[in-house]
Length: 87
Image 1 (tube, one colour):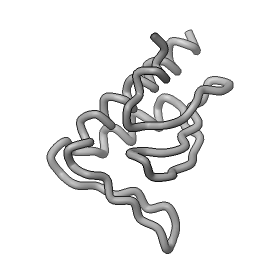
Image 2: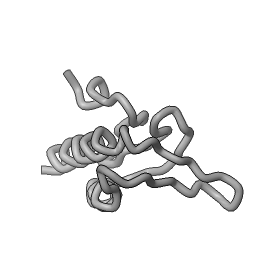
Image 3: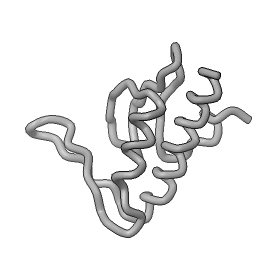
Image 4: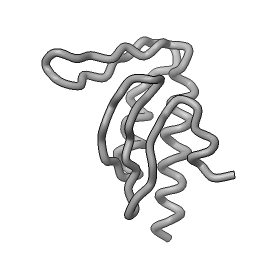
């Protein structure tokens, strides 16, 4: 089973040693990430504290706290996959 098949909260795809994120928890979030950026994002999330993604001046996505642990796990799974592709 590929990493993409294991993702429950994050939506995206791998292309040319980067991960292109299309969404988190059903919210549209677009970005291109390398392993280090994904690990940095995961470190910023506290399992017990609410957090939000600021998309632009008018859009902020609030992620439910109960998804934090899974998001951290998925960000690290994606980063691990990117690292293994670069070896």
